[in-house]
Image 1: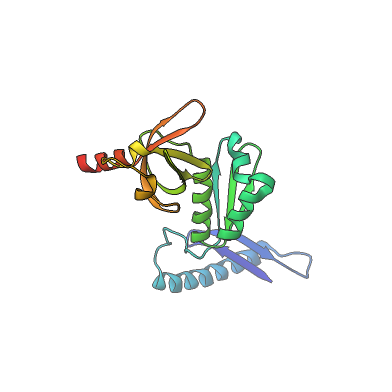
Image 2: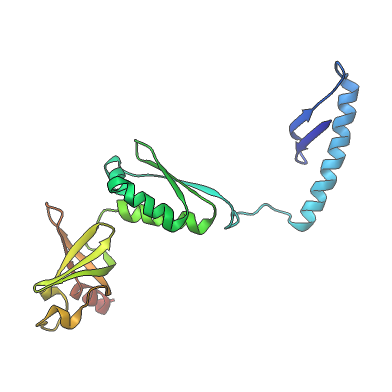
Length: 208
């Protein structure tokens, strides 16, 4: 039993099972020559269908995505009692393994599952950027403004004066809990409190 794998340029692997003490060089040369003829014949048939290899994997092919996060963020991805990482796994279908040095490996059965899990991890570990516009969800209304979730576990305050260019008497006149809105980060103070503005988004849009 003699199996040979390779390309047009040469052999990449071979396996031989024999029931005799050994073979000589001539037998090996003959076997390799026959294997090459068979290999070239098969490659010609394959090239007739697809002449070059695909530049991208099939979206249905299993894959592993590896990223590095700051070690301080590991607990955020895992969550209390493993709740966060368990939710990501259940909702995306991907499996996540985190090393002590912050290496995160995402195992998925297809492209969409892997990318969905990757986005979740990136959102959890992302740092809020001053000046950046985020799409957030209104989490809670207060008399003085609204708290908006812009990233997982990261809420900021839109003060009533930053909701609109017009005077706003009641926050509930303009916003409701669950609304998805665009906000701009004005400031992140030393305590990590985030100050947001809807008005600044409108001003930036008008200027552009």
